Length: 354
Image (cartoon, rainbow, N blue to C red):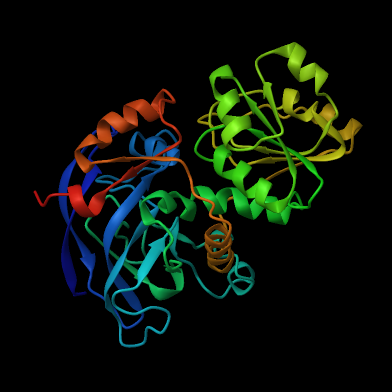
């Protein structure tokens, strides 16, 4: 029998998604494992989808959380990457096959055998548990070294929201100075994307349905333009002006209206994950030789690169730090878009053993 260590967290027991205290076990620290005390964990929009089984593959009980940061308390005998006392992070995945083409090319996130940080199925059939918990154990290959003097509370969402936006901007070439890039949806993903794009030197236009976000977009984030995407006149006036768009919208929406904003040969890259499939307007793609693609987080090498870039350029999400016992209220607020722009749970100070 594998040795285990006792852990405490908050988890969902069924599709109601109601989170409550839960005692469980993690594996004991292996030769290549890092155990750390969880200090903060971000609340991702996908956590809301997962605890309510919106996507149909939930395993209960479920302890969410894949924006995890903390301080190392124990390392295995063969660990070289970090030491006790170091600050670290863990994002969306905690393992992969490590031998397929994707893994060999530092793209573990696309490995067909990747294991998610929570709700993942391990080879022995057991389920992984996430960061709404007091401790975390992960293989050193899936642990991110946290930069010195980089805030952990505000920075926690970067190991998901940060790499989810950074990776596609790099891969699809939307990181070149002088390009005009749109960001659809000024929320948890979108506002981070804007910060990366400005650091890259691009011109940025934000597309959103809320007029209340305009002043923040222009005055605080430094966006160059703001378009109300639910106002046809504003959308028509901007037709054919963008080199690319990063679509961060997590609800069902029109792709046609976004494709119309692209110049010929422009790129629409989707990273938001709506509950239901979107309609793909093929005619708009073919007539302008436009490209549509997607992206899902990033590999561990690129995630480390992203964190180091963010620290160098002081790129931090806007967060609201909450206590563990506030998490159900936070989920209700997240469902109606009442957060600016990311909840982060102060796990270290507010998670009490049941």
